[in-house]
Length: 131
Image (spheres, rainbow, N blue to C red):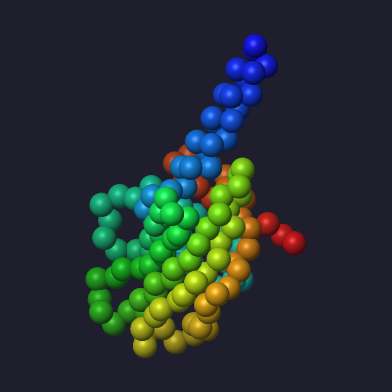
């Protein structure tokens, strides 16, 4: 009976850890290229400016930035994600940006890779798994 109880506790803890990526976060940079090795997610505050990501319950994400000046590079990326244990797979469906984004390469329908999910204080660190 103790073994069965331990199994259910472990299953619950794993499920909770996998689910706590959902919601809106401050992100270290907008997801827009497949070369990125790491993203740091911080809890969303009332901050209006910066880079953000929203992971939905429907396994989709939207990553975007917001700045006070209209003469900045604005990026919005949309895609899908898949949680598995302590990893998340990211797939970029579309990337939109304005004329002030000079060095962006158009990407769509791109596998961005698998990232490990680790927790540090209130932050979540997504680090790309090397192939």
